[in-house]
Image 1: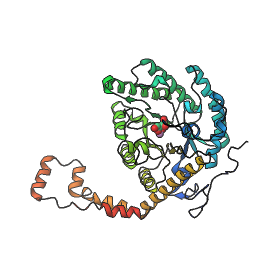
Image 2: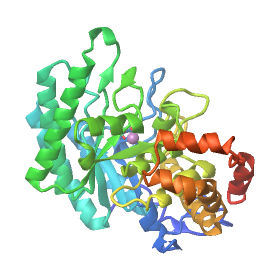
Image 3: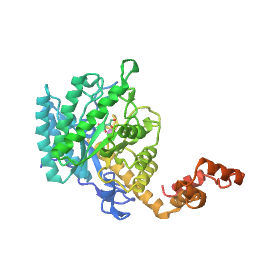
Image 4: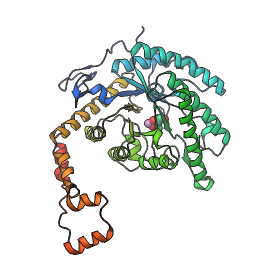
Length: 437
Ligand code: XUL
Ligand code: CO
């Protein structure tokens, strides 16, 4: 088999003292943490779109990326050429999973029929590579935001024809995800939102979105696809307001339209901060609702207000993410999916390796730190103790539903003042967590 990276071999774990930039310092796939290997905890996944299609162009500048395998090719020939390169990268990084959009693995055709044929051609190649490498599909998705027909949205377009084209595209994307043994299917509402309320019937658009998702659930049943459905929240970009703006908004929408039994959330770090939340907040909101599904692992830049999709190298954020992951029983169908791209200035093919190695090591550190914090027990004990007035007496009686406003008024009048209001100890706890980072 020809190699596009002859000087890079399979990335190995060399430990924290290693100075080899092409080695893992923390990600040791077989190391057991809380009874499970790191590989099984983290379920790393590499994305097709940024890795193979990211060219380094931005709204001010031309593509910068050096990608020798792309040279001189276009259309379906380019799409075919990228498949083995992608799997070589994934395999050398030891990625157990990958994720893709239909239109980033295969090109748009002139018609839906032609697009479907292109997709079938590439799906056959993906399947071969999956069989060769053992790499599995974490989730598939349909790209419903690039083509001009989606300018007003897909399922929320004011045009019923666009709704129909979107349905046809998702139908096919579900079929190929199923064919490839995908463990999930993600809906990111690419343009499901509005640019101005002056032209928007929000209620009607939300009803349509729900109808669309119900059709997807029904079709999955029809074809026997048992993978997990995800919704991926994001507050803005490309539209001014995206309906799936954050975890709480998604959960409310799913509940309102009886979709919650079928969906979990795929949370993305950079989307969380765009929504004005920390990723840990978003994960706690999802976890509390039993809907913590999968993680699009990246980060934004604090000084930039858009979705920069950078690789996360901050161990503190990764520790928070892994603490909440462990708290809710770990990732089951989901994974740590690197929806992240190298900077426009990182032009060389090997930058694709440094970036993923850094991301994987950061999450491995986060996992080890989180497990150590949990084993230490002081943080967990503090939180438990903070709520201890609910464990017996008055609190237990309220939780058991035995009290009312009248009985509590009687208690307060008798008591005179609440005396059990201890310090929150924020700084003490921040110092405690820092002992592990
Ligand atoms: C966009 C984004 C998408 C989804 C899949 O911000 O995160 O790539 O993850 O459509
Ligand atoms: Co994403």
